Amino acid sequence: MYTLQKDNVVKIVDSEVKRDALKSKGFKLLEEMQTAKEPKDLADMTAKELTAYATEKGISVLPGMKKDEIYKMIADAQAAKTPEESPEENTEG
Image (tube, rainbow, N blue to C red; front, side, top):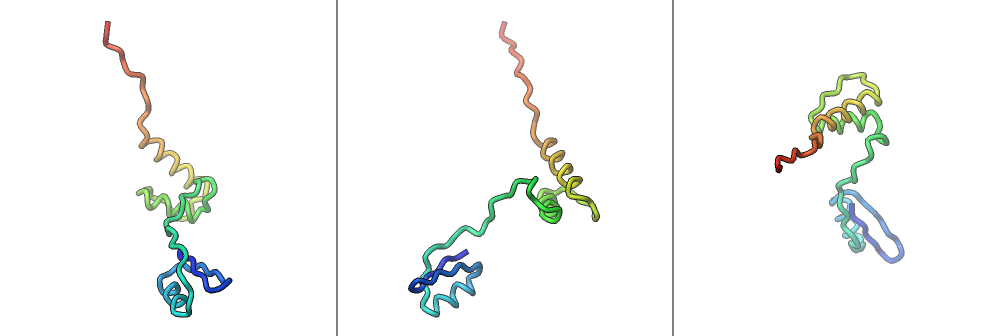
C-alpha cells in the first residue's frame, strides 16, 4: 500500500503501477505501508478464509465443509503441534 499526496488530496493505492501513475501526475509518496496483513483471529474468518488458512498450513479441507468444521480441524491441528507441558521430574535426592 502506498500513500501519496498532491496539495490537499491524499490517495492510497495498492500497486506500484498505480503509485507510479499518480507520481507522474505530481503526487508525492508519503508512506509505503507493509502489504502483509495482520492475521485475523480464526473465529472472525469466513469459511473461505479458513479454507485458505488451512491450506497454507498443510491441512486438507474437503469441499462442502462448514465454517465450524474447518475451524475445528485447524484448532485440532494446532493443538497437536503444540507440545504438552509436562512437569519435569526432579531426580535430585
